[in-house]
Image 1 (cartoon, rainbow, N blue to C red):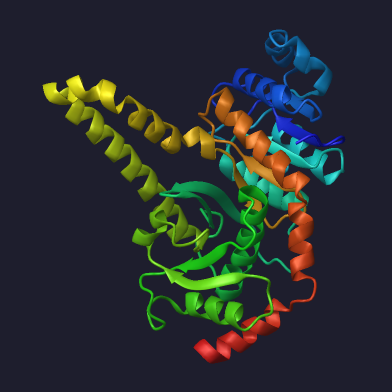
Image 2: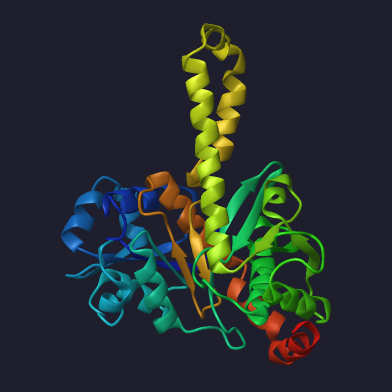
Length: 350
């Protein structure tokens, strides 16, 4: 990647096993990307204790001691204005221009709330969304919103399509991502009015976007689209349904092998297949959901991930910075009046 002045701020106290996992993850990133500099916010004594195991990492880090940190049980409303926490200060470093992205494995609700309050939304974007990368049968796709907005109107969904399109270009290196709205059917008359309004906006705008229409949930794993867009309620349910199904399949395979002598005998012949399947389904490879639509990159690592998973989240953040993700969104929206298109869609659909 080799960016000369790439700086990422880290909430070193976020997650189930911090700062141990955080420091171990950063050591993995540093080995592959020695030019990235890290600003660590948290308990200096604990951070230095873990960092002593990785001497090469020390020169790439600057530590800022904080007495307080956000726990998983804290309500966003209680911590949103507490500027003394490691999470708040790590996010504020992006606002102040000290860092180009922030990564935290801490409380999701708190990270979203503080990021929205401190970084603010990009001009012309009405609401930010949570986006993540998921595997399908021939590669990967991005999906949003995954829970930031339980209810959305047509203009919100259209904005998610724009941001998801740019995210896929930056994160997946796709030149012309296929963008689809998740719906209960492919027919024009099916689904909610908000989805129809979003489709109308996208079809009648001059966006540089390959909009392919609607996609049903069962089609998502089959490489029908590269960007899947839904409201946060539907998207979160779809995500958790996929995760639960993957877990069920892996569990059934293991149980079948345990109860069959022939299956046990055949394991050596299928070792390569199982290894490839496990690697493809490894959730650590897709760690690092991002809150898109803000004036700064805010990345959420899974709280229970290990060092490798945390390193993936940090590397994803670095890649988006290198590809000027936020600048790309601003340029895409510069000559587009989505509010005007939304009014046209309202009279057309409603």
